[in-house]
Image (cartoon, rainbow, N blue to C red; front, side, top):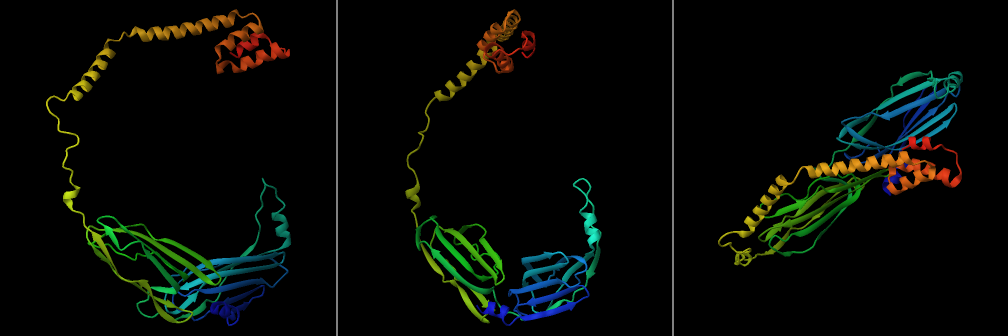
Length: 374
């Protein structure tokens, strides 16, 4: 591809090299004169020159309203006393004219003794690394950004595919339109079709995908529309003006206008001439039977003897008393085990396990101690 050749063959190697006493900075940019919104690739290499020191680097592009950037690569050669960093950025100029790429850089220096001291502590005695931080003022890189042709909607190399499932339908039965725009370049979500009094549009936000790489960005947008109306209507023509920075040519994307024939439905055929359910005549016995059933239930609740619940509670209490008495009367491990097994209650699981150990395995646990578990 032309873009790759420009980057690897014709790029301006070492646009900006600053040889300091201890660090060397190299900036390699794929295109110094891009178009507005055209992707360019910037490679930054930081190399430690003074190997007598232990060094750390902290580097990044600065945020700006004049450009947008994405870091797409980072490599670190972390050899002791020989630190090297390699950064990769994909950059999009937002305006034409002079655009300055600005950088943030901090270099830190220390020595072997301080590194040894910092790693001598354990997990509970962490020691900080003593180092000297120096803010490095790097010279900005100048881009001479070329303006786009007028009335451009897209920048890149794209294709547009659309499908309409039918051109004739029934009233309020929707037609489905799917549109996909994809290619090399950046795409931002936008709407193709607008609301119209002649029809109703049902849709969601377009599905957007974008992938950044050293070659640029690959993007796609997909719209799914359902369009319905009670009468025949026309979908407007869609035309997008695009510009390809690689070929420096403009081109059109879109699809033509469509006439959708809608077959009307006679309103009279939709009316039901039979009443369902049939109109009621006389007394509504269903309502009154429902009403009296609720009255009977209410009265029965008032008349129900309250001591019935008391008797039930008393029976439960008597049952607990009987169980407690049987546990007290049990004079052997086997007898107590028989009482608890009959109850089949999870509350006695520990006691049952202990009793089984004594009865079947010969374990030595006193009967009184087991009763304490209950």
